[in-house]
Each structure stands twice: as structure tokens, then as C-alpha cells.
Length: 168
Image (cartoon, rainbow, N blue to C red):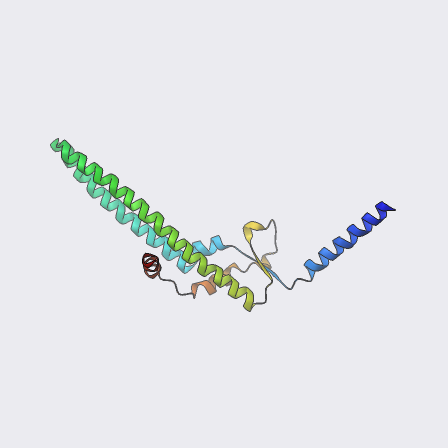
């Protein structure tokens, strides 16, 4: 009798669970990694950091040339100063890039989450999951491209975002 009762409860609970899932209005999947990589904003951030890094490399290459000249002249004091300047420059560049990456990533993430939430509300979607959280899904519910189109229309200026953070 107990076994029958437990089995009946399990069946009822399973039915209730599956009915609740089935009656959910809608579900969608999004891959924010693709959006970060392929959106206009993501591409502009990547280009910005590539330029920043290339400028830093040029600066370090100039110091390396000076270091070699000081080495040839056997000017140990100048050599030591240039090596110290190279280390300081590399450290400053690395710190600047890390800080700006954090600022821009946080800003773009916030804008993307707002875009996703606005899209969810305007399309009457109950739940949007990240593709990394799902083992398998029907590609019909993937809204990554739709979100990217919406996200590309959101105002985003790298310099304004960086200045906004400096004011804090």
C-alpha cells in the first residue's frame, strides 16, 4: 500500500512538473560570447585594445633601441635607467590595459544584460538561458543574432565609458 501511494505521488509530481514546464510561455537561448566577439561594440573594444597594445610595443621598442645604444657605449648608469624605464613602462601599460578591460567589460556587460532583458520583455519570453548552461537545444530558440542586432543599436562610446569611470 505504501509503495503504491509513493508511486502514485511520484507520478502526480512528475506530471505536475512536466505540465508546469510545458505550460511555460516561452524559452530562448543566447550566446553572449558570440555577441561580445562579433557585435559592433565587441569589435570596437578589441580594436581599441589592439591599438593600445601596439602603441605600447612601439614605445618599448624605442626604449629597447636606447638600451642597446647605452649598452654599446658601455654607459652602465644610463643602461640601468633605461632598463628601469622599460620595466615601469611595461608595468604601466599592463595595469592600464587591465583596468580599462575591466571598466569596458563591466559597461558592455551591463548594456548587454539590459538589451537581453528588454528583448525578453518585449517578446514575452519567460526565460532566456546562456548556451553554456544548456546541454542540448533546438536552434529555433537561439536568439543570439536577434540580440546582437538590438545590442548594436545601443549607444556605446569607449572614451565616454572610460571618462565616466575616471569621474567616480
